[in-house]
Length: 613
Image (tube, rainbow, N blue to C red; front, side, top):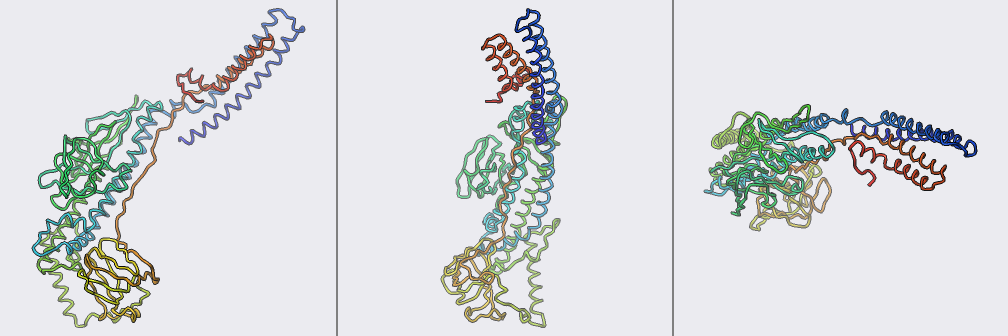
């Protein structure tokens, strides 16, 4: 609609210019009979004869003015009271924001379901983390935070959380200055928030900022503060303290004493924190130990004033009071519209609740694995109970139940393997060196420096972190994993399969891979990265949305025609009377009319602003 208005404006200007030229030619032609009348009798005429042509020309001026006004009315732009009303302004705002809310609500719901399908991945990753953290006689609960971070749950899910936080924030950020822009452009719409029976009117700006609501309690007061890296410059760097005061205590014991207001999270850095006081809203996801209860929240920001919406189990709360609905509103003299954010907030809370459930189930799987290692007396990253446990949405198993069921399944697998009449072999498997995407020729050293494999052909595998392998160099191994040793004779290996000569070498932090050559997809390369799949941070950015300008009443054509006609008359009379000042004055009037007709029209209609300066 704005583009169409611009086209109409350009078209209107062209029509006005054409009309003005036509009228001025017509009026200039009127000078011919007047001039002839004044030249009668060689300039000798009485007073009444001299007045007659002047009266005639004045009539032409009136005629020209009327014609200019009619043409001006015919080609003028749409009036503000038809296509640029307050109702249209509010409707544009509502339509755009309502569309975004529906899209976000459904999008969050879709990703919440997709996220739930990753449960077995996180459970398996936690088992790998446990194999590194376990030691005889130690307690798993003391390592709960490390399990979430070492399994990459905190970093990957933190990136997913921050990506959605960015996307939810953007529609509000894009429209934040709409109230002040509307006022400055002449609209009479009043914007604000509503929550139940409460309303807040705004003058300049309004927006919501998505986050996680936390009201810490004893034994449930710890969170993970998601990263404030590159997203800190994109409006995602704010921590809100909604109570009179609060404290954040980092894992290293550093304590931050805060008062009510806003803080940049880059002051604290990502990591696990213990909260006191509050409540707080920020980019929080679950901690492992003494995890706080988390809720989806929208901080309401109106002209710098803060209020909080948060949802728990479908109920929406506004500054601690349950409300039936909440959102933004727009009202004008003849009506009002509103956009609810309730559905989007509830879905956002649903995603955060799903993250909490996944974290809890992940720690349950970790505890069952810890019990297995306690029972055996040693840890092995390749041992897994998760592989035996179905992931059901309405049936959860305790760590003890997972341990028992997993143990029974392992025993059944052992019986199946040892009870088979035929030994399991790889005789029917054909392997060539070209079929392997990655092979390393070199050796593997234990954490004590002893040789685990020499002159071998192997492929290393890692579970949680990227690893760079470099030909002619040693790589320090930093995670649980394993290497498939295809052969212990690098020079003589022809790529054929012999299960009796293959083996798995468990890799743990502190071991060293020594690579003579690195071959990737059949080509020797100087280096390559074992790229573990991960969730990258995706930051959203919407262009700022502004209301269309309200076109004012423009009668510049009529003003221009009238002033040019008047100036021509003054100049003509100056010529006839032999007075140069009259000619100069007439020319000045013509110039002012041609250049500043718009300004004079604005002064007449009350819409004055400088167009030429």
